[in-house]
Length: 183
Image (cartoon, rainbow, N blue to C red; front, top):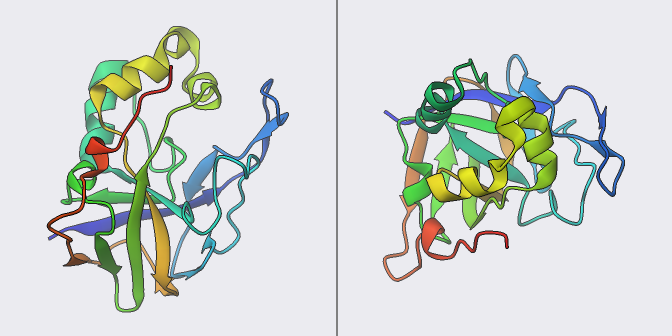
């Protein structure tokens, strides 16, 4: 059964040498039922709103299976929130999703897949150390990107909630079909 392992929000804004000067990538799991509205998880923030957040990028989902792959590659534990995700999932191939696919999470929240995540230099700096060099290209080539989601129906969710694919448009492109790696 596909399920939600964790709901994550920004733990703290951190200084970042990029153009914005801070980053909200430091996301960590929160306890209990969490409100989800049109702009995502209540109390979450994005420092770079040009590239993150908004209605079409209200939530970012990342699969535990993909995190486990990177744990093996990087040789360290990568807890929920490490990828800047709001939703750590299990049992659903998030990278096989189609644009426009809809998921029900728990009893009330419904989301729609809008686009793949495009890794950036802020993400590379967050990964840190020797792993940061070439990270954007490496992450892109692995094609374990995860989707951004639009909130169609708001409500409350929590870790352990079931994820059900309620609509999968047969003629829509897959998440990885529309991905264009950064130059």
